[in-house]
Length: 175
Image (cartoon, rainbow, N blue to C red; front, side):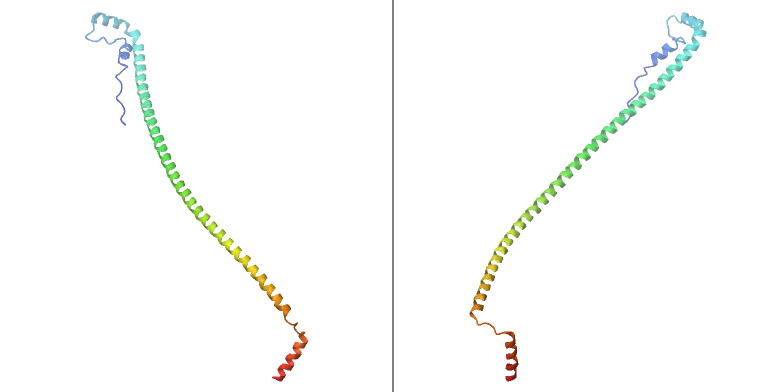
């Protein structure tokens, strides 16, 4: 951004006053009288005119420095404002991206939880079915035990082991 043009020389009128109107301009009224008065006063005013001229020069120099500082401040303020706007825009974009990603994660978690809930329901159903089958198997086992007990009571008692051993010896010899 280019620097704006300098304001009109505001020190021009001060420069005229600083020198007390000396030297007398050629087109001045009462030129002769003014020159005479200026020659009489010049020895007393010379130091003051030099001081006023130097002071005015310093004021102009400091005014230029101040204008430069103010211009730099304006540029810096504009840069800071632009950086702030850009940072805010990046932050806004990042928040939007995070919201989108969080929405996707939430959707994925919901989908997985629904699948887990379906799997859980299926597992519970199968467990109930297996429990019922186990109950049926236990009933059948109890029935088989009861049947074996009844069949065992209706059979004659088994001979003692010594008798069976002796028979084995006889039975094996007769063959």
